Amino acid sequence: MKMITAVVQDKDANKLGNVFVKNNVRATRTATSGGFLRAGNTTFMIGVEDERVEEVLTLIQETAKARKQYVTPAASLDLSFESMNAMPMEVQVGGATVFVQNIEQFYHF
Image 1 (spheres, rainbow, N blue to C red):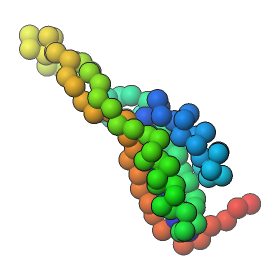
Image 2 (image 1 turned 135 degrees about the horizontal axis):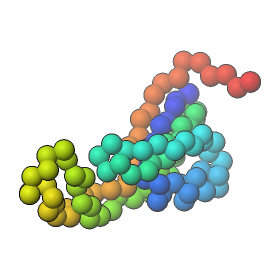
Image 3 (image 1 turned 120 degrees about the vertical axis):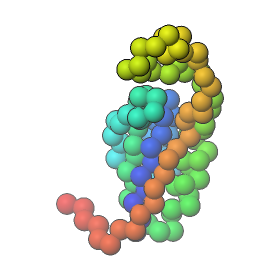
């Protein structure tokens, strides 16, 4: 058995949750936030049999798409003129960060 932990952008969370339900993938969903953009994320924790790992990874990859977005860097503590006139910059957001771990024991009470 494996534990798949997938961190996805909030924009993809509902769609991915629906895909999991449609494909009979049980997942626990928690709200999280990222450090770089301070944007909302959703973390899915999925306990799955070894033979379904590739299927679940494919569902995540096909649903949580990376995209480009313009953001204005957060003001730093340095209040110099340069930091006050920060220009928006293009960054890649979305997609998924996924961890797959071995599970030695699983209990369902």
